[in-house]
Amino acid sequence: MPDQTLLAPEHLQTTAPTELWLAGRQTASSTGKTFPVLDPATGDVIARVADASLEDATAALDAAVDAFPLWSASSPRRRTDVLTRIFELVRERTEDFARTMTLEMGKPLAEARGEVAYGNEYFRWAAEEAVRIPGRFGTASQGNGHMLMTRTPVGPVLAITPWNFPLAMATRKIAPALAAGCPIIVKPSSDTPLTLLLLGEVITQAFAEFDVPAGLFSVLPGRGSAAMSEHLMSDRRLRKVTFTGSTPVGRTLVRQSAEHLQRTSMELGGNAPFVVAADADIDAAVSGAMVAKMRNGGQVCVAANRFLVDTSVVEEFTTGFLAAVEGIHQGNGFDDGVTLGPVITGRQRDEIHELVEDAVAAGARLLTGGEIPEGPGNFYPPTVLTDVPADARILREEIFGPVATITTFDSLEEGVARANDTEFGLAAYGYAGGVASAQYLTENLQAGMVALNRGQLSEPAAPFGGVGQSGFGREGGTEGIEEYLDIRYIALP
Ligand code: SIN
Image 1 (cartoon, helix red, strand yellow):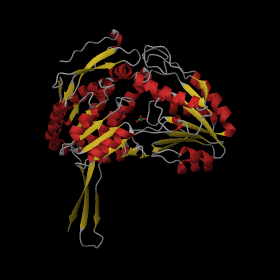
Image 2 (tube, protein in one colour):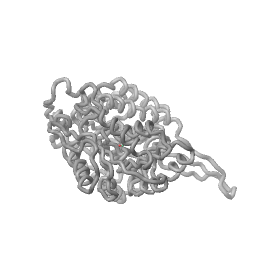
Image 3 (cartoon, rainbow, N blue to C red):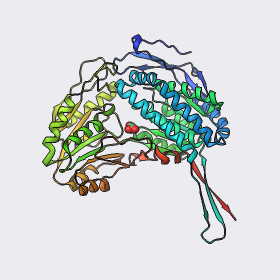
Image 4 (cartoon, rainbow, N blue to C red):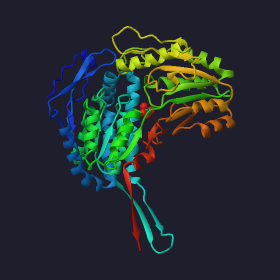
């Protein structure tokens, strides 16, 4: 049993379990090791969590392989019922999930509640889709036979999930995998393992109620993420890896997948532009900009990294945006009225600050923020920079924090060309008033997802994913379930 010493004040304690979920059981790591989880708002240790070993990972894969035949042969309606039950249980425990997320990740409680609702929708969507997995029938082109196309589950899946949305980034992998008929092993970020350990409790309860094989789902928190994924991927029984995280780690996983030709989905880094055309409604653009930039403290792959604004409206946009940014209330996510929490770690905060300092040294103008406050906690203030030189690192790299850069353009063609001047291609935002400028933006912004006159595009029913160095594969929508299905062609007389 890991040392469950909780040092945070009593009202901040989590109800989440702290041991591994290994095929329906809470167990200590086979090595007996644990690691601390910290509250980013205070630096306090909030729990010690079992540190999964390679032996634990093999045990989880053995259980997944054993559970696969029964689950993959189960009726679509049964999968719907199980996923619906998980959805109901998560909804009932919204407050437990939200408090756990605020505690280990730092986001304001209202945002954490929003993430529970959003993340849980992936279960509802997948439950509704499990009974609609399509097939196709046709006549062979020469008329000498028929063709039947069916879909079969790919097999055991490894999901590696990030800390920024501890629940939602996992549910959008777990729900479609289960709907497709696959077992799944989840490796949560070591910064935020508690949320998924809590989800393990809920899923285990739903599985027990429906007598579903418990080996379908395991949660393996641990510090050795690279070693664990390498170990599991060296086993040919693992058939799919789905990852949300940085582009360099994604590349390593894709390389490793070559050995056994495992299927991969890679949701990687972004550098989203937010283009404001001369004819845009500027009040609407400011509201959208606040969401696109400040949601989750800017710690979002699809966060707007670069605001590109037509010179004729930049003053109005900047004045409105600055006023809105100065109205942000930063603090501990549990406190009333707080709209911005800390960033996840001290290292992350220092990396954000380096980008700001580099831009200022290169000639950017700091309109607000830009100073690291006294501790405790990993706080970085909401920051706005203008006149950022084109070669500043902050325009090339993902910021992942509450920092906005504003630059200008003189024609929409120039604005879009600059927006597309990035190796990433996850999301892009455009604000325009007229049909021609709106159409120009949606047709020419190069990204897997383009939002027009909206600051938020994430949606369980839509395919989330990027192009270029932002990765490949989609999460959400019918496309999200396809990621867990192979196509079988049956030739018939
Ligand atoms: C992400 O950070 O990967 C995106 C989260 C979301 O908006 O769904």
